[in-house]
Amino acid sequence: MCGIFGYIGKNAVEMCLQGLKLLEYRGYDSSGIAYIKDSSLYIQKSIGPLNNLEKKALQAKGDIPIIGHTRWATHGAANLENAHPHTDITQSLAIVHNGIIENYTELREKFQFNQLASETDTEIIACLISYFYEKDLLQAVIKTLKLLKGSYALAIIHKDYPDQIIATCNQSPLAIGYSENQAFVASDVHAFSGINLHSVILKNYEVAVIKKGKALFFNQSLQSIEKKAEKIFIDHHSISKQGFQHFMMKEIHEQPITFQNAIANRFSLEAGQIFFHELQDLKPLLKNINHVVIVGCGSSWHAGLMGAQLIEKKAHILTTCEIASEFRYKDPLLSKKSLVFAISQSGETADTIAAVKIAKEKGATVVGICNKENSSLEREAEKTVFLHAGPEISVCSTKAFLSQLAVLSLLANYLGSINNSLSKEYISEYLHELVQIPLKIQQVLSDKDQLEKLASKYSHYDQMLFIGRNLMAAASLEAALKLKEISYINAQAYPAGELKHGPIALLDETLPVIGLCLNSLTLEKTVSNLMEAKARNAPVICFTYEGSKDIPSVFQDTIYLPPTIDDLAPFTVCTATQLFAYFVAKKRNCNIDKPRNLAKSVTVE
Ligand code: F6R
Image (cartoon, rainbow, N blue to C red; front, side, top):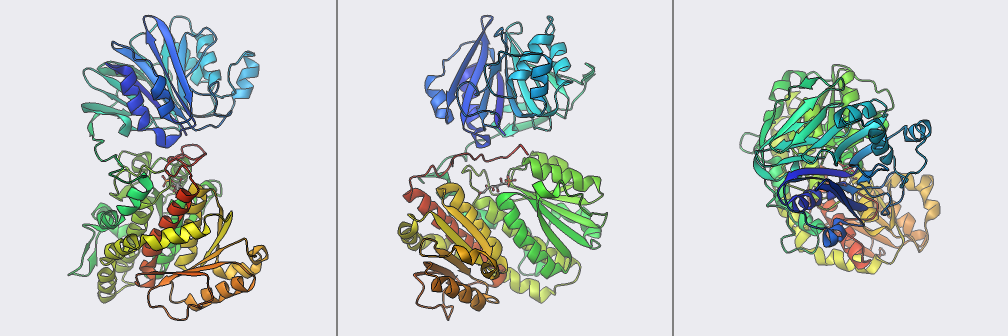
């Protein structure tokens, strides 16, 4: 993971810190900067979030080259020695790295680098460049790259080159931006700031020599290559907490709007029709597919699980949902009649991108479902359906997850309509219920006090178990993930019917069981499972519809949510469980927006 940033221009330190702030979603275990000034190399590092570095960073005047890094630890603990930038033994050059060098131990032994200052795989790169350096930095970099196995995005500065940064990458994203007075390099184009910027995305093994106002590109044979630059304007105005204590709470509260953004311009209520303009060219193929695979990780996988159930049910097409990190190593059965939906909020998740590449190799058509424009997923997928949820800053996904669900719900009905599995009347009824969902999400938000009270009552438990059936089984997985990642409670989830096949052995008064009973088809069955938990002394909490009958009064707590049809119930219940997780984490004084050990974008395997 990690975020790398480089800049040449005025107020270099300030610009670099600002860029790193926008990359902190990639890791925040430690951070550091390095710059060249008056032929000397300066390095500063800090442990913990970027604020710690900001407090002590020196300002340097003039147009200087600077590189910076925000780390998500892979090799070596989060301490100052392992924080980037790393340098060679002569302290002549500094590098920042995102990725993993798989053969670093072998290289260390081969070149007998015995006096390394850190435990990282990165330092070996700095040592190798220095080893090969004979007054030509570009040559030395290229000789080094030829030895590296693994993934990398690198930015390199050297004392002998006070006006340039060298950047290169393989399997890790890297963008270059430049205008007359400045030049940028970053893991993500959204970390640039400025107007009239020309931007270029580096391809694997390409090397850029970046100077103020220009960038030159080379292949690994040192031949110059032409790359077409695109004009971009990056606007950061929407990144603020807007009065909320945490980004997570702000983003949960945005959901009535972001839900509407996800479905906007994709249906006509009057005509009872659904359309995805971005998939228009694929329509003939979509009518003929015989297999849909959804791939994603974490919350995106959970959205995919629900999407798969919906597509199979509505479009009558065999649909599976796979964790991208598993899919990529299983030699999947795909053909020209397979459609793959790759879901990723960030569009940068390494496992999901790898899964997309495999699906393409096997002849499948890949459609991305993504929140970020200009992302790796958008570049790899044949078409991309955007969520339009706006930047999601809190590490745990809330509004993007709900938008993924909204898009998948519409897509399932869209596929069902174009292959004639669903009637116009059916679609019309569904759409009439769909447009009510923002109001129902708003109602859950307005009633959040009941969830805060519930959280206060149960926040001292160290474990919790969520159960549900049908779409509520995947909603349980998502509820457990939210809770565990921000409150560090050992929260697990099972399809309710599985309880009796093993997990029931865990139950006693120390393990609250939370049943998501918002699937009318299976409500009674899930309630019976909750009764079984109750009989084993587990505290039982039931989330259900307002007006649902037969919820036993013996349960410790019941949370009532606005009623809707089964297929749309995930929107209300997931909002409620997000709020529950938030309030539990708050009660436990956890770092809600930046939970320990996590990063917003997972760009390593
Ligand atoms: C959970 C969470 C993660 C992400 C996962 C995939 O709250 O945020 O599980 O869902 O890392 O990320 P994307 O969607 O960016 O591919």
